[in-house]
Image 1 (tube, rainbow, N blue to C red):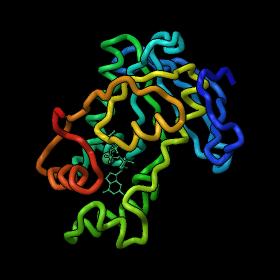
Image 2 (cartoon, rainbow, N blue to C red; image 1 turned 90 degrees about the vertical axis):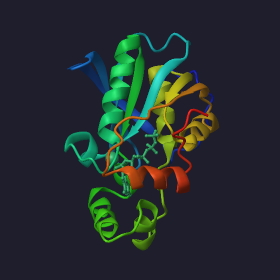
Image 3 (cartoon, protein in one colour; image 1 turned 180 degrees about the vertical axis):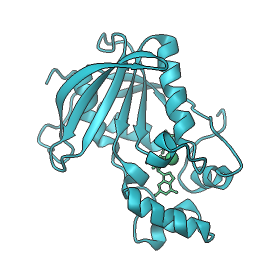
Image 4 (cartoon, protein in one colour; image 1 turned 60 degrees about the vertical axis):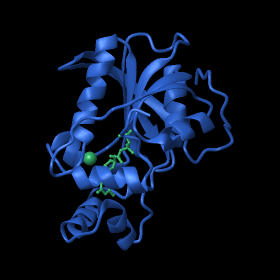
Length: 210
Ligand SMILES: Nc1nc2c(ncn2[C@@H]2O[C@H](COP(=O)(O)OP(=O)(O)OP(=O)(O)O)[C@@H](O)[C@H]2O)c(=O)[nH]1
Ligand SMILES: [Zn+2]
């Protein structure tokens, strides 16, 4: 692997290998889609890139966690669909960038458990309480799985599209220089107001301008 990133290669827990790439024409222009496989679990992840991302300059980047309901089924319970679209649009506006689409459905608890969590939320629990009532931590995602993907893409410095400080901390931990956080506040509606407020209050998400 052509890696500009100093990483601990003895750690195989989060190892992800590159498999194949292809063109992906979209509403926002043509991306290249890179397919990856997580060695330990067989989980499949993809990265969409546009332009030259391996030239050492900071890359506009997004780590997007899978949300079938928001990304594909038009749900208004969360802000994922509009965030995905806005990130691809921002990358296409610059003509350069990368979006890692990580298969971490339901903050890592999976789709069916997310439906269970939504059922508890329909009964009054907030997004964190629902996870806890099901016996899960508030957020099970481990963003270290981005390490090999970014290394394969030749990305060592990013301007990260996120409101989640934990993503920034983990990228720094795995040797990626986060030169800037680019806020991504879109998709607020009456159905996700409480969800967004809980993320800010309990999960540390930043929705202000700082
Ligand atoms: N368990 C659970 N997962 C949810 C819920 N709503 C959305 N998700 C998942 O949360 C993930 C998206 O995380 P968010 O907390 O919305 O945002 P983030 O990725 O941490 O931060 P940003 O970079 O700012 O978007 C996706 O995997 C969704 O499937 C919920 O109520 N319960
Ligand atoms: Zn969502």
